[in-house]
Structure formats: structure tokens, C-alpha cells
Image (cartoon, rainbow, N blue to C red; front, top):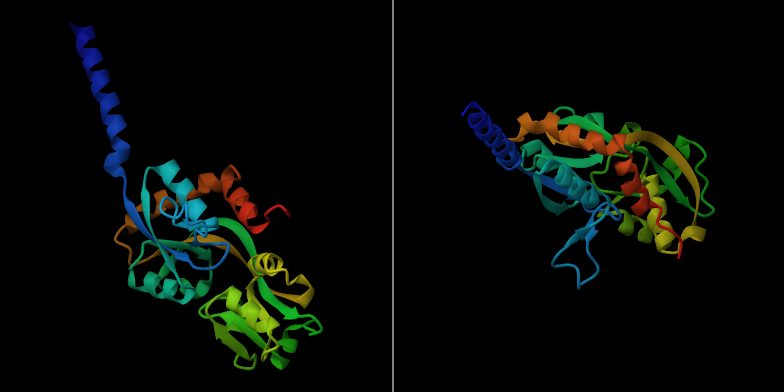
Length: 254
């Protein structure tokens, strides 16, 4: 009799444990920055219904879901609007390069991969030091945090555009912008993809940061922040986040 009761209790606890993940599962609202190769619409029409979005952040979120049992409601969003959504609590978190300017409305979470930010100039344009940027116009995505000094310096002329692709195309179209600013890995990825490597030359590194989980202080799921960060930390510890980043950012040459 005692053994029978013990078996029943054991079975009960197994069923309870099995039900626990679904009971605790949550859906997080997440903005995906609309920048290639971070997140973009799937160009393959045959796969779009099943996989509408692709990119680095998309893959990281899929892995987060697989490991945690949680789901994410993903919204492809222009960079500048991500800031607003974090401030207002319209999303729970995003994955983006951390800037201390966000500390009033967002919390810095797990650092996923290191990033360099700076400026790449058209071929023949010299940018050996910061003051050289005052002599040219630099195209940069609107709202992007490149470097605190660069971002707020009225003495550095800027042309604010929608995204990296537009910035690069403006710079090579012999218009007033003679350089592009942003994440150097992203810019180089697109420059290579467009076959424009010969059109660009000097690179000036302005800042280093990390691709980071950025959690809104206004999120209704703020109590789950530590758990979310812990799941992403496992992806850092086993090298998954780095592999995802490198697979998209540095694809093999055909």
C-alpha cells in the first residue's frame, strides 16, 4: 500500500513538472531592427509564409524560444521607432547595440557579441582622425547611436537616412554625403554584398559596444528580465550567439 501511494505521488510530480514550462511560458513583444543582416523580410516567396523574417536577431530569438519554451511576437521596426517603443513600454525588449543614453528607460542585459562603430569613407576621402569628419557629410541611419561625441556634434555634417542600404547608395551616387556611419561589420557586409568594395577606403573606428538584450523598464513582463537574460547567457557560453552572428555577417564567398 505504501509503495502504491509512493508511485502515485511520483507520477503526480512528474506530470506537474511536465506541465510547468507551459504554465510559465510567456509571450514577449520584441522589436527587430530593420537592418540587413540583422532582420529583414524573407526574400524567398516560397518560404515567406512559414518564415516571414530572417537575419541574425531572428535566429537568436528562435534559439531563445527553443531553449526557454517562451514565444516572441516579432515586429520588424525602423531603428528610430525601437527607441520610442522601449521608452513607452510598447515592447518588452529588443536586441541592439547598447548605449548608456538608454539607461533612463531601458536596462542593459546579456551582452551577445562585441561590435565596433565608426565611419567608412568613399575612396579618395581621407578620414585619419575625428576632425576630418567636419570636412565631409556622413550618411547615417536616423536614430542610430554611433558614438556619443559623433551623435551630438553639430560640427560634423550628417545626412540622416532610413537605413544602411540607403546610406551606402547615397554615398556612392556622388551626392553630398561622402561617407557612411554605423556598425562597421554591418556596413562592410553590405558593401561586399553590393560589390562596392572598390568604392570605399578609409575606416575610422569611433566606439566599441556589444549587441545586447535591452529590456524596457515599462515592460509588463519586467519580472521575467533575469530569466530572459539567463537563457541568452547560455547562448553566449556555448558559442551559439557568436556562430549565428558570424554565419550571417561573414557568409562564405560563392
